[in-house]
Length: 359
Image 1: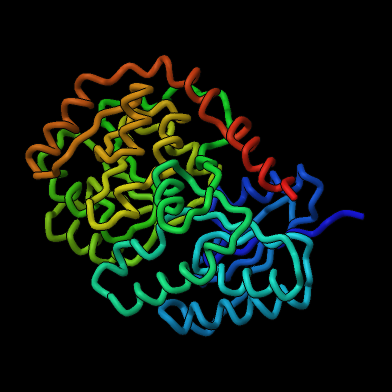
Image 2: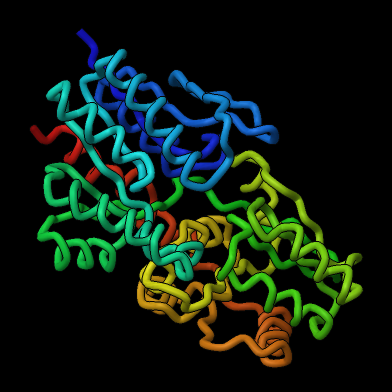
């Protein structure tokens, strides 16, 4: 009899490539997969090889959202009684952990980030303390867990004496097509959430000094309206495009046309400092050099594999100078395809499969 796995996430499923890859890997391990998330007004349509369930919630954010989500998720898990509960990030863990204990079912926890250390909680000590308390109560009791990089794994090892497997969020390997952008106009791309601390404001400040270049911003988030206002204030509307959320396939097609990919983070908490964003690998697989922040996990990839330029500060003139130099003297990318064959999901998922199959 085929086993059932329910994969829990608080987003709308449409752009979360890590969770999608996890679901496909669970299918390879002979699970019938249900992916449980939420439906938003701007959610993209889904085409998946597994079952997806997106719930409309009364609340969009804040404590009431997390409470409503976890109550609904808990009732769903108790009713469905799956063989495996796969919890993505701390915000799904209360319901997932309680249901797994009551039903005596296997639970796997995947920490995509250091949740209590996200920038949004930096000036909210009470809310941060609540999430830290949830961690303290649950994580020491977790038997099966994984995360996205070694720094986060080491952090949780020191804090709770748990050993998280490391499964990096790398793409599925595809042959890198040639960059079809042969025009004199150059393109910079940012892909990801439009949230505080992603360096986007500083990139916009630098754009008036960048020559003959368009900035493509792909994604959505809390500060989008602020960024759009800044673009108008700087009078660079003709050089910055906000594309919103797009499907993974369309994003891949767009990324290969870029000349530079951006991954600039501010040091406003351990979550960003220890992060290893998936766009580092997405740019690599697209054959696009990255301009990135010199943080430990990011630097370990960029320096080891020579995939881009690392910087430590973001003054507009300096940042524009680095970008102009990268555009005028493009980095060598002929080795990117060989690296992509090493840093790909086909190899990375072997560790995930071992966690899934572990009793």
